[in-house]
Image (cartoon, rainbow, N blue to C red; front, side, top):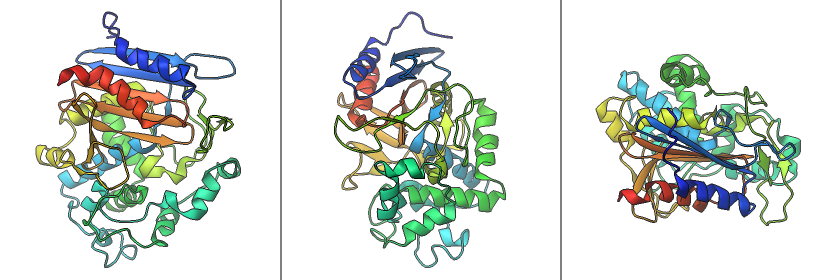
Length: 356
């Protein structure tokens, strides 16, 4: 049921202030606490018609996709179909032969593999006005991995930590090799279907978003307050695939993470593995975090620690965090890509900061 008593005023204040500062066209959030839910929003879902953000709207979730990918792979581990410490080459022969990279390294971001999104050619095509000419480009997983492997590894497997989308493209490829089914089908059959996530799906190379959705706006990753804003709602998300290509809603994300944090999707031993984090210090990533297997913890300014994942793709930010046990969650969505991560931390601190 909807919580009509609690206002979650702290979160609403962050939404309002962020939109007022001009760093988000529209900002929506949903709290799930026990059997109650709350939805708050500021700004608009469409800058032309000034329609508000709505709870049923679907959006691109970017790297929050990684948690779905890790969960699917861990369910396969739980079934005995493969092992966390299997070498990648045993499932994808000819790709990483002799490197020693394991499935655990992929999920934990400790493989050392170059992040393909940082490739010079890809950056030239996807940052700035060039993106508008490349927004419909289609990428296969093999091509993305090939881009990454044209660069030397950053370190030996297990010798450091570095966030890399390449790891999760390989994880998606392993899912398909082990099951014989498409990655999208496995997400649907193992997570979205059983949990009733009716608005969550892998779009593949479809450029549109099915169902109700906001317009998604981008400054094309260009710095500066005067960078022009473009409507990038329609784009080909195949460059994200199992690392960042999915679509969902605030309600579905809260439902998924509630089940995951609550230990309902994995055997206890694998749940512990997933939520055992290693420090991300030195990786040039989000401060005060540890990374598990497709999830990360974040210590908020108040000292409270929450778990979940966030992600960005052209035009869209998502951020979902909650308490271990899954009884309290906050999902956030901004239909623009030029905000900063501290915005999400402020909203999280407003919601969870009194729980220390």
